[in-house]
Image (tube, rainbow, N blue to C red; front, top):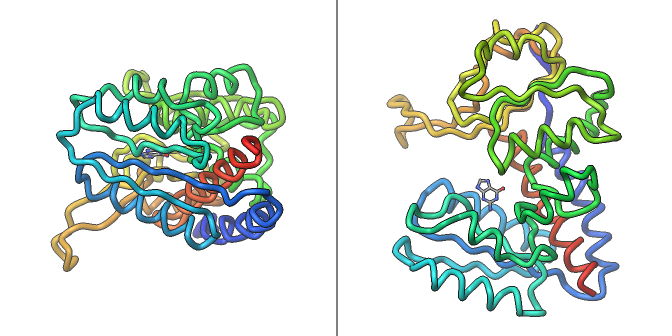
Length: 287
Ligand code: GUN
């Protein structure tokens, strides 16, 4: 039997209703700045979607596009200027940055109060401490929200996260294991001895590895909840544009899982909803 789709779009829409109320009650219009460096087409699509979502809810946004040969010093100077600009509440620098820029060093510079991505060491450190009331990384917190919204019980369940990135995998594992969620968590990564065997133990499987359709049906325990964080472009000569979007999870998993998040329309809209939520929180706390 086919798995039920975990509808990220519907969940994000439900969240947005609450966000609109918070914007109305906020003494200032929340204002997000988004910086993108270079011309990676996928990153431009993500940033455009973030800016459009701000417009939809009435959040002010400033979108800065820098050329791929911008110097690290110039980017540092812009971040410092935005940190000191009291009219800006949130600051996001789209990842990845070009190789000549030290992404971690730039992240370290962002004022933690404006760090709507939740990537600053102060915010990730709070998460490690189990303090989940701060700026949480948007994709993993969106996954948690989607699981809550669908009534998935995590306490005492076995969760497996495939991938250990600072953007998704690692914070996802922390959130699943945090008090209140209470899952027992395994992280699968490129050096894991038997990734398939680990995945087969999962009641909840989160795939965040960036490898198209890596998770096959025979990697998944029957009835498991599967969350697909992957958004990969794969060549497809049958499409007019020559490519299609593929998740990290093979479509055949729908025959085994109980719930499966689709790509697109699953985690993507939730990431944006959580970014909007963090921006509103930042504005509320700064005023
Ligand atoms: N690149 C892919 N996902 C993200 C994200 O959530 N935030 C930023 N800043 N860059 C990304």
